[in-house]
Structure formats: structure tokens, C-alpha cells
Image 1: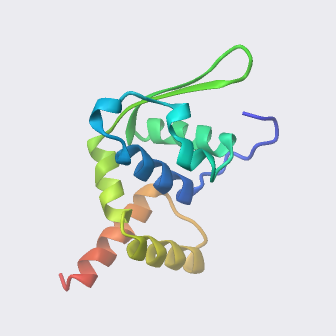
Image 2 (image 1 turned 90 degrees about the vertical axis):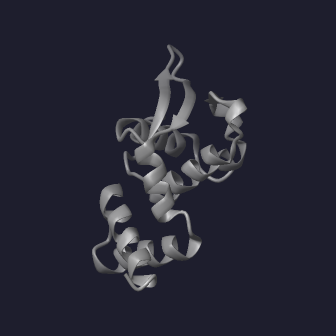
Length: 130
């Protein structure tokens, strides 16, 4: 990553990245960084690299994201894990995502992915009258 890049998690990037990974047919895995064309047009390489690193750390995806001697990163994504799929299922709907992210932003500013997922699940349950 470039010097001066903030280590700030971009929740929209995380969601978009998981949605893009999910959109690929199983026979195209493992994915590599260049496969992620749609999302790479929307976010900087630094945000994508950091997001992939955090998704790997959280065990939401399996794969690697390693820097080489020149400072370039090689991204390989093998799969979305069970936990990653559960998280994505809670935030997949644009309506749910908008409601939850706006609500969190207005009330507390930001929250962890775990809290986001929990709030989304509660919103879904409430919408279903459960």
C-alpha cells in the first residue's frame, strides 16, 4: 500500500467486494485481483487491498493477499466462508444496507462488521414481524 493510506475500513467496499466475489461461477475460483474489474473501477487499490486483508483476518473469505518485493500485492480468493456468507446474507438487500448503514452513521458514526451484521439481522426480523 502507498505511504499515507489510512487503515480505515470502508464498509461499502467490504459489501461490494463480497457481492462481486459471490457473483463469480464456482468454476472460476480461485479468483485473482485482476478478476475484480467491476469493484476495482469503484475503489482505490489501497482500499481493495485493505478490505481483502480484513476479510481474510475476519475469516469471511479464504485466500491470500501478499505483497511482493516491489510493493505490489497479489490477491487470490479461494472462497467465501460460512461466516462470510452469513454476513453477506444479512446485508445483501440494498434496502437493508441503506437503512442499517444510515442508522448507524447517524446514531454512533461507525460500528464493527459484527455489529453491522447484528443490526441488519434485527432489522430483517423486525421487518418480518418476528
